[in-house]
Length: 176
Image (cartoon, rainbow, N blue to C red; front, side):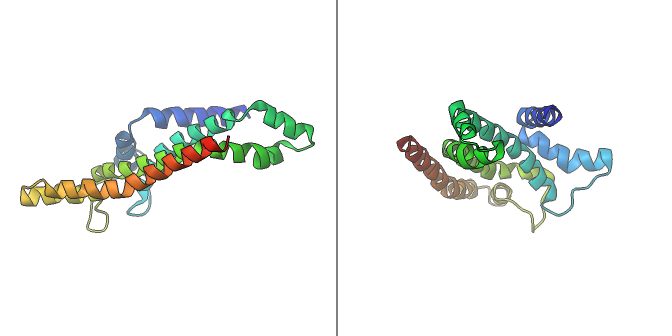
């Protein structure tokens, strides 16, 4: 349906084109000031901004995965009498999922790292994020060790996820 396709294309182009930091500032500061619209909750503005950015990248990843499935698969399903929805749910999406699982995992790793950008929204004791915690500790101790500790924590979180992505990619290649 062309209006939905057009709206999706505009959304994807805007939020893939804007840096995540700019999106966070727009949602956290510009939206409340310009439109008097406040995103509810202490985590709301940051969560919404990261969801918008990540959603745009995920939409493209999923679209590419679906397009990677040969057209003959849909034709074969339709020739067996399946409707479009059933063919997508039982034939196309499962095949696309094997293709897109590694990039989805990589996108999740990027999302975890992008949380360090939320410092621009300001913090309270309840909302302090890891990188801000490290920067504050460096300011108090005049020592770089806290930032090294923060880097190690990010690595402890992200390295296993990247290993999972590599494993899934290898497994997907074997399954073809």
